[in-house]
Image (cartoon, rainbow, N blue to C red; front, side):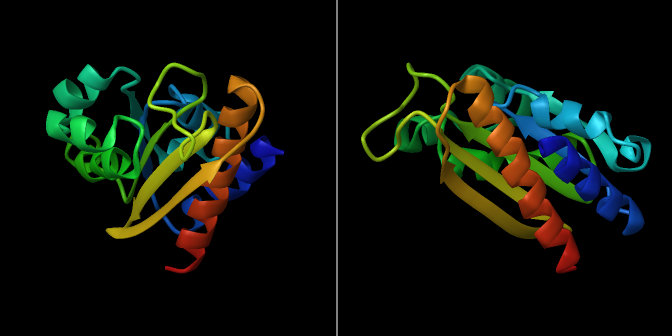
Length: 160
């Protein structure tokens, strides 16, 4: 199912002449890989940065460390920073940041359980985002995040 949504999303972007880049933490490059497998990858995919470790979010993208103390590495605030800072590293029409909790041991709480995922996208500078809680194992959570991100991007691109 995710493959079909990613393919549809990639085609829609190609038809509109849009490119995309990713800054991925919890999905560890899975979104970028899924786009690379589509027929239109050469037209739409610019690349991605996998910054699973919080220190890489700082060193590669310049996310202020203070945000981690205030909001945790798995938060919408950090995810927004990833997307906003990505464009200076990988110029594209769409920048997507992803953080979240696919396994125990992060910043999970009763209000933010394992399965909580954050996606923040800038589509031609316009923000689109979601915070969703998915169930299942790590792989299930990532698949569902990829699918939901494709849906978010299709809606955003359609609204252009």
